[in-house]
Length: 121
Image 1 (cartoon, rainbow, N blue to C red):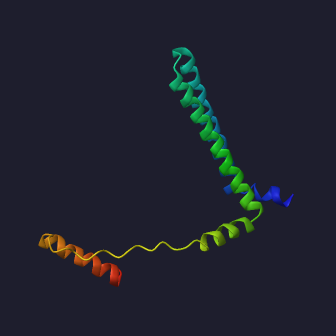
Image 2 (cartoon, one colour; image 1 turned 180 degrees about the horizontal axis):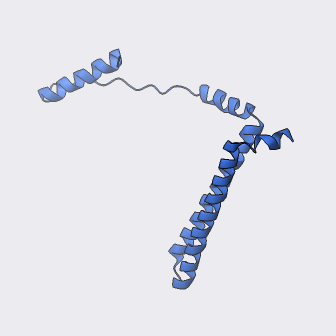
Image 3 (spheres, rainbow, N blue to C red; image 1 turned 60 degrees about the horizontal axis):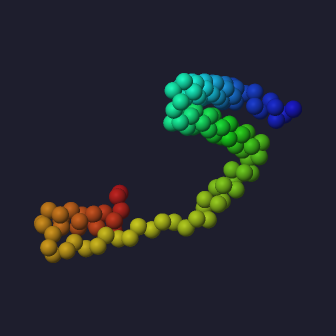
């Protein structure tokens, strides 16, 4: 019963309402697109109808994920630890400006190299 009460807070009630509104709107748009496809015998509109219904399915997927994360906060910690184990992306340093570049471009490249070396402080 404690789990049910957690999903009856104003924040969760707003999320539930948002999901229902999204499903009604996306379902209605999909149905309108389907009716248009039947009237015009147009396969493109059939595709659009399916697309809107898939958007609704994605909204349900996100809602279920939010509920599971609320029920088991350890899931969020596992995601954070997986994020921390990824290697950092290192940007290669800029090549020194060539002799055949014009003076303005060479000065700009030197400035960029200085910023990369000293950072923006």
